[in-house]
Length: 107
Length: 127
Image (cartoon, rainbow over all chains, first blue to last red):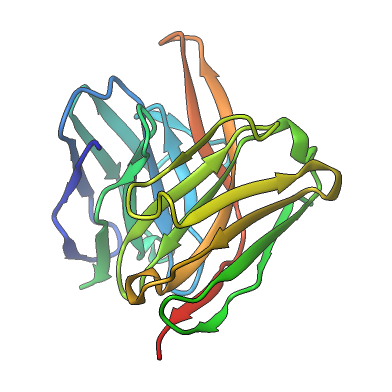
């Protein structure tokens, strides 16, 4: 199975900050990667697919980049509602695998 | 409104069985692959299994292969997960999710995304 890693595991930031989350795959997954946001007690929510395509309705402060094995999720100006845990998920091969998550905390 | 509602969770002893259900509405269930994802308490997400529209293709994560069985009833717009030989490490919130294939013309690639999720059902395996 493809292993996914994320860094950092957690971060503290203030509203208005630029936040960058990294995700790395153990092998080339082209651009077959999605980013999901999860808030406590809630189901995950899809933000980005194909490494860089924003789902309709997702604020433009979110962006994704990368291909192959290295990917990033950027939040250009953190908003109060963005404090959550973010997961990457590869859809290149089975079994699908999630990264361990990055928790974005309020500083 | 598109909805997925899981049910069937509960407390079960190690070695026991449980059947989860996911009732869907607001979209044509028979046109979509469907997925189960779980989350252990305080932990990250784990993809568990998915199933093709007609049930002819199924994939599992290694940790549940041979113990869990995913199935569907298109006439009832429902997805199921039969869980046997349950272990303490199967304790988790179980989510069902719709698989959506989306095409990116720039990369000429189809992507598989989980675009709609249920609220989850809690499974606790303990004596």
